[in-house]
Amino acid sequence: MITYDDFKKVEIRAGKILSAEKVPETDKLLKLSVDFGEKDETGLVKPRQIVSGIALKFPDTASLVGKICMFVTNLEPRIIKGLESNGMLFALSTPDGAFSLLEPNNTIPPGTMAI
Image 1: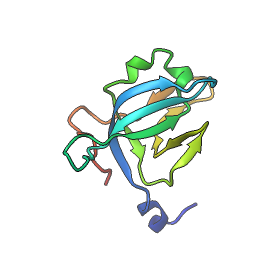
Image 2: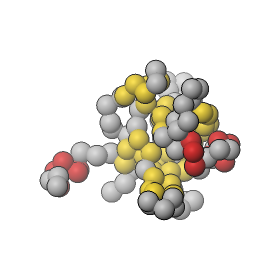
Image 3: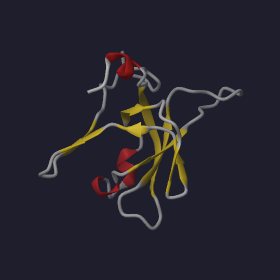
C-alpha cells in the first residue's frame, strides 16, 4: 500500500502517439514518440520518447500512430536497450491474453492531466 500523498506525486497525462517503431534486436519493445502538448522555444511540438514493452500486441506499429493514451510522465528517465525512456504507457492485460491500452475519449487533447 502507498499513501495518498505518495499517489498524488504521480503525474498522469494524455499523450498522442506520433510514431512507433520496433526496437532492433528485441521482440517486445517499441520506441514511441509522444506529443504531451509541450512546445519548444519556437512553438513546435516537443515530443518525448517512451520505450514500451507492447510490440507483441502491435505487429503493425502504424496502428498506434494517432492514438491518444494515458502515460505516467514524471518518472525519472530510464535507459532501456540504449534508448532513453521518458515516461510509461498505461496498458492492461489478463493471464489469458486480453489486452487494452488506456485511452480517453476523443475529446481529450494531448497534455491533459488526470485529476
